[in-house]
Image (cartoon, rainbow, N blue to C red; front, side, top):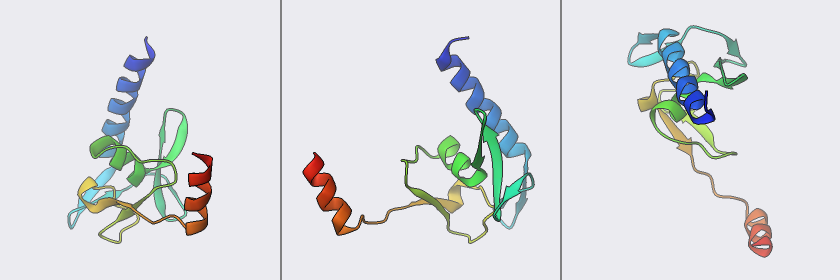
Length: 103
């Protein structure tokens, strides 16, 4: 199987497992599976990931390295894409200055 096909099947499998592992409670998709540090976890492509981050990638779009996916509902077990957003934080001035020198 080609790598592209593997990734398509991997995402389809992750989506199916994510949806099967949730109960809908007050509009939240509450994860019923494995948990770590108060967050749901799921294995995707052989790595354990937080389920809300996987949900964001599957249903909304990509997440850059270093970005955080947060919950509008305040429920750390929720993986409803409508309740998730990327936290856009400004970089500290020292990091911005350092990166501009390296460009």
